[in-house]
Image 1 (tube, rainbow, N blue to C red):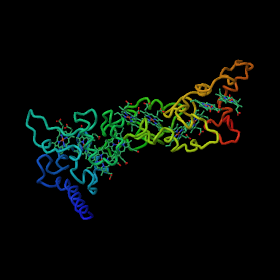
Image 2 (cartoon, protein in one colour):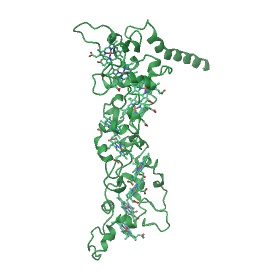
Image 3 (tube, helix red, strand yellow):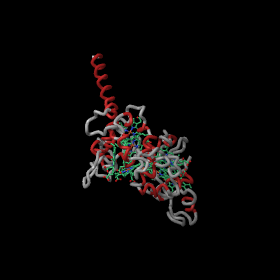
Length: 311
Ligand code: HEC
Ligand code: HEC
Ligand code: HEC
Ligand code: HEC
Ligand code: HEC
Ligand code: HEC
Ligand code: HEC
Ligand code: HEC
Ligand code: HEC
Ligand code: HEC
């Protein structure tokens, strides 16, 4: 058995080094260009409208790595066989097209993505398939720019702009009075989301919303002697993760925030006499942080007599 595996391994090794020899080999099949990138660069050079050369500054351009495109079929490992495309084109004839990338190009998205996943199947785990972005027909190239020395989507400062192209309401939210420091490049969308898909709703990184928040706000997990039920259930019952015009990312201001669930009885939300409370005294329920003036332990309390979340 052990021997059989050894044989298999050798075969695989030979196969995987094949593309490298193909590209260089003058005997390569008619479909591939005769001398790899050198063929392409005769026409696609620094004077081209589309800047192709920066790819040599990226891991894809690394000839030392035999798993990288330039360790193998070079340009054609992504753009497909270019032998015909590179040839002479008669007047009135069209140059045979190459695989083009982006969901707005004639190449079917499945074909484009197959070119990338041929090498990246392990990076794109199973969640990609059937995930929101795959289902919406996105191409890998809608987010990734491989001909840039630094792919913007991999840079936490530049990434949000890539996402905002399609998710404009998150841009608006990030500019609000209270927000996560995404706008300042200190945090990217990928702090909470997995753009390649996830088992959780909303493509969140962790199994559920609260676990995603606990990554950084661990102190809110508890355990508390006196839990506040909605906190353990779902932070987004009170917080708007992308931004809010109320302090502390609150989706509403207290008292209304609290009164979505709690009755006004005994806890009036009118400044002037109501519920039998003398005129003026209601303000303590509204001024400053309103309910939180007294119920300061809104996320839960560890005080023996903290049942009212006041200490
Ligand atoms: C003889 C010149 C020439 C060579 C060699 C050449 N191309 Fe092109 N290529 C062009 C021209 C011209 C266009 C513009 C397409 C058009 O307008 O028909 C183009 C377009 C493209 C496009 C855009 C998609 C398309 O089909 O319009 C890609 C991608 C491309 N080439 C990749 C390559 C690759 C990879 C190679 C090497 C295998 C290569 N080219 C070799 C001339 C060349
Ligand atoms: C021939 C194999 C191959 C193909 C085809 C390929 N890649 Fe890669 N890619 C690599 C290798 C190798 C690396 C370097 C990282 C590594 O060693 O795992 C890499 C790195 C990357 C990275 C990380 C870059 C960085 O700066 O860290 C991204 C993103 C990426 N590839 C996206 C793509 C996309 C999108 C496509 C399709 C348009 C694609 N790749 C096609 C082999 C490939
Ligand atoms: C919705 C945007 C989006 C799409 C679509 C997308 N990616 Fe990514 N990809 C990202 C982001 C953002 C990162 C950086 C992840 C991080 O920082 O955790 C990334 C990272 C990567 C990496 C580097 C992985 C690593 O662990 O370093 C590779 C490789 C990659 N993507 C390949 C692909 C391939 C292949 C496809 C298409 C099947 C694809 N991506 C589709 C946004 C996208
Ligand atoms: C890792 C995969 C990959 C490799 C290798 C690669 N490209 Fe590309 N190419 C792309 C993607 C993806 C795009 C779409 C634009 C972008 O994401 O940067 C593109 C865009 C282009 C375009 C513009 C096409 C259009 O639709 O207008 C040309 C021309 C081109 N590449 C030529 C080349 C040449 C020449 C080489 C070799 C020197 C090469 N590419 C190597 C993936 C690759
Ligand atoms: C602090 C964590 C966090 C960060 C950072 C974050 N999100 Fe979200 N996102 C969430 C949560 C939680 C949800 C679930 C719904 C909700 O509570 O709004 C969500 C939902 C979404 C949704 C689907 C719901 C909708 O409103 O359409 C999109 C799209 C989205 N986020 C995009 C982004 C983009 C783009 C960025 C980066 C600019 C980003 N998110 C940054 C936590 C985050
Ligand atoms: C080319 C357009 C495009 C780009 C770029 C893009 N997305 Fe999306 N995204 C979509 C579409 C389409 C959906 C499907 C659901 C929808 O319509 O909102 C989606 C869905 C999502 C969802 C899940 C929404 C839900 O309702 O569960 C999240 C989260 C998300 N995107 C985050 C991101 C992040 C983070 C980035 C940047 C790394 C990004 N997207 C880049 C188009 C895009
Ligand atoms: C990657 C780390 C990270 C994750 C994940 C994260 N946060 Fe934050 N959160 C921060 C940082 C950093 C701040 C800003 C702290 C500061 O400005 O002092 C912050 C601030 C906040 C604030 C206070 C904002 C204010 O204006 O005072 C709230 C509320 C908050 N986060 C809720 C959440 C919720 C809800 C989630 C889950 C959906 C979440 N966070 C996920 C890092 C994170
Ligand atoms: C019942 C409503 C409610 C729920 C649910 C809730 N919070 Fe809060 N949160 C608040 C209020 C009110 C404030 C502002 C009170 C203050 O300044 O102490 C706040 C403030 C914060 C702050 C900033 C101040 C601080 O205490 O650090 C963070 C961070 C935070 N919440 C995280 C979370 C996380 C994470 C969850 C989910 C585990 C969560 N919250 C669930 C009501 C809630
Ligand atoms: C999403 C609904 C919801 C919101 C919003 C909410 N609560 Fe609660 N709260 C509950 C539930 C459910 C309980 C547990 C009640 C029980 O055990 O009978 C609770 C318990 C409490 C308790 C403990 C009293 C008791 O009966 O156990 C206090 C005090 C409290 N909440 C204050 C607040 C304050 C202050 C706010 C606003 C910052 C708020 N709540 C927002 C649902 C909510
Ligand atoms: C002036 C301080 C104060 C303010 C402001 C205040 N509370 Fe209370 N609340 C209390 C005290 C004291 C208790 C008795 C709980 C205890 O034993 O600690 C209480 C009890 C509660 C209870 C438990 C059920 C009950 O009636 O005993 C809830 C729910 C509650 N408050 C919600 C709120 C909400 C919602 C607001 C904002 C509209 C609010 N409180 C504002 C002091 C306050």
